[in-house]
Length: 88
Image (cartoon, rainbow, N blue to C red; front, side, top):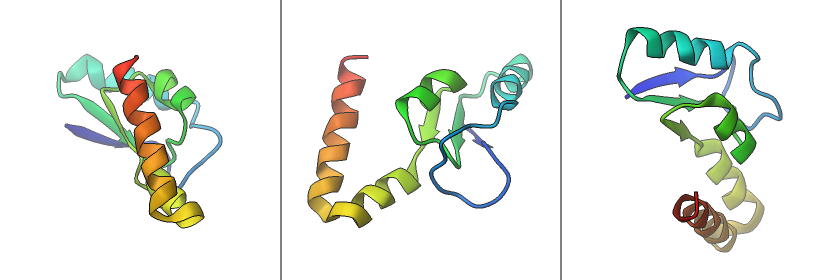
């Protein structure tokens, strides 16, 4: 897969994505059929729908869940994500 960094700077959760990100994804898709996974700053389902990529990398999201509530919180977050994948 092609790992597309969504922003300059450091990784972490952001409220907004770069406004040029959707254009960059379309540009890459024009020249390559490799699946695109976007990371750095992707933190919500709204972000995931907006970017129209093959996948997302949300490591900071999991780290924040663990840091705010330990393993119990992380399990809740993972179950919620899995449920969303099952139901679209």
